[in-house]
Image 1 (cartoon, rainbow, N blue to C red):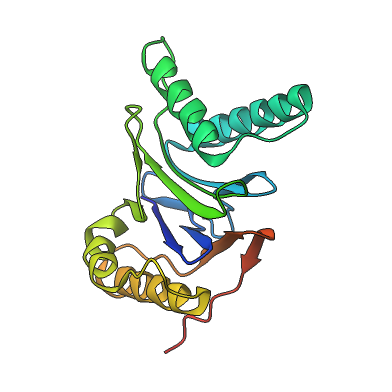
Image 2 (tube, rainbow, N blue to C red):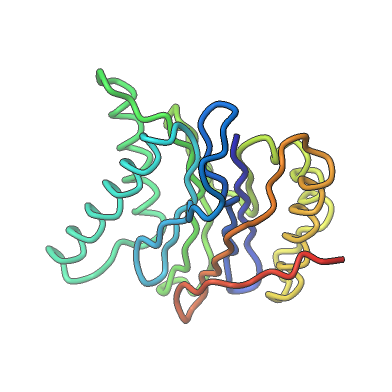
Length: 198
């Protein structure tokens, strides 16, 4: 059971994921980083089967790094999202499919705009202003419908994210006490500490 959120705003993308590592009904640790930084302006939150997620995230990270070394420039967010979606779709048609859901957020330096892509384990991809995966999506998407503002400054975006996290913590049966939050903007990827106290 996992939860991940992503929100775009004026010049940024916020990507957040819970930090629980669990298998079945057992919580193994509470400090797992489920957001992989794929480049200077690209981050990916992943959820799904534990072995598949880590293996797929490292596979994507290594291949995007290889592409950058071969061509002397990183992929733009749209190209990276297309490559990731194609990798999921190809694995689906193999004997060892990846059961991975992805939220890929990046800042396109050429367009000077944030980009967010929602992908599921079937290789479906959509360019969205906000997204969620996991059981938290049942609670957060209505809040995001109401409070998301594409022109919001970073502080307002973080407040919207806090609303989503508090709703999940209050209403979902399973406990998600900590979340890792990363912001992608024109300056790159940085980690942000959220104060979830009321």
